[in-house]
Image 1 (cartoon, rainbow, N blue to C red):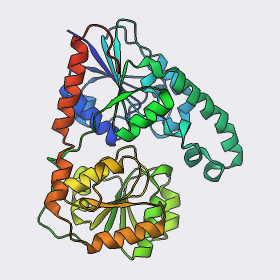
Image 2 (cartoon, rainbow, N blue to C red; image 1 turned 30 degrees about the horizontal axis):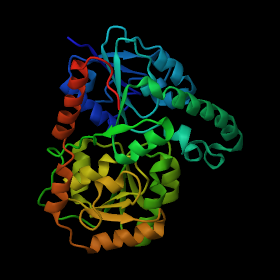
Image 3 (spheres, helix red, strand yellow; image 1 turned 120 degrees about the vertical axis):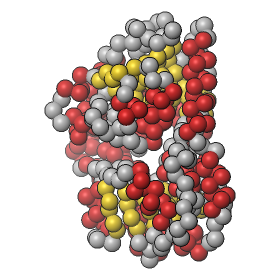
Length: 370
């Protein structure tokens, strides 16, 4: 029987990538799971049920909180995993695990959430002088340039790439010079459903609080539109965003899926102000029948139907988002049509497509290519 190893960058919370990983772990419960760092209890039981292997970074004090500071060590860590016992390696990668070293007899499929953002096109958002100061930024620039070269030079370690969106497929082509197949990530449309309650005058953001998400735009736009904003999520930007909001925004931190579903159902509109590679949140909101106001770039072009399930905003400015929020709150959207659109991205659909591809690779002689 073919032995399967699944590799994920780190396990520190249930975000979009982890929700895709959860379905894969459910479909392949006998697989073994490899990750750089695991914070016990931070991901679902379906993930933690697999036999788990971590890197040497796991032994660092407080690594669950400060693992991002170990970024220069990630290439060494991923290259030390041992896959000699496995015939197939499936990496779920947004940082570096697409570059694991597999034995010659094994095949490697990469489900690519995105090529490494901060090493390629978002250095300034994470490490620019305005973000961390002139001297630290100058120190990080050659470090990240070296990491980008390593990321590019190791792109051939995967036999086949699967992209989460056509937008990410373009990024894979641009940075790795590789073609890919698109399989959209899963949305739990069984759990996220509408209810009979009427929405309140409330805008909602559900997001990690990191630079590229542009939560600052949502804060300023809601102030201009005169609508209350609730933010669910946590991250390194939280303190700065709270100062910017000056008490006008409710920050809830991390919340349970049940609480998030309740907030989706209450919200008049759900906001996506940053350029996303795909974006699970807009589809969870649409599964609950709520319209989305999103920046009309990146993955939102594949998840939001302009005028039918929400509004796409041309410019990433508070003024443009404020106008779209006002329009969305005044418009009568068809809840059933919004819901039907979200159902196209179900967990069952994702699981079936990935299982078909993986089992096909297990049965195929020779390496799968794309």
